[in-house]
Amino acid sequence: MVKHIVNVLIENKPYISDPEGDTILKDLVIKGGYTNVKSIRVAKMLKLEVEANDPKEAEEIVKRLCDDLRLYNPVLSVCKVSVVQG
Image (cartoon, rainbow, N blue to C red; front, side):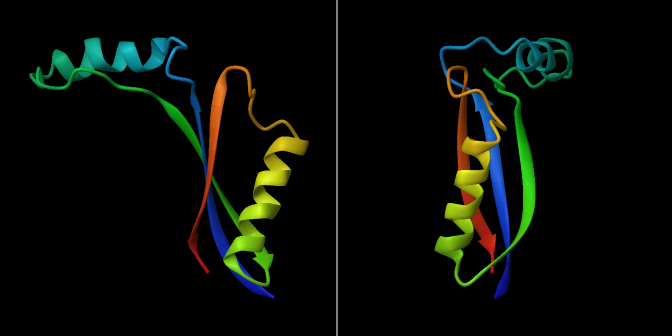
């Protein structure tokens, strides 16, 4: 088995409001003079170390884990899994 690094990105679906992102945009970015930035969305990123035979298997393990353990709410969020090393 080989060690793989797998990233999981969990973010609100596009039609769900993101008050944290809006606050960062209004109170930090725009006030800091970066008026060309028009939108910020906040997400959670999990970094997992997984032992698997190949990257595809590592990705499948993590996808199953996210779904089985409900690491995200599929009604409100999008979950993207990607193998970044291994």
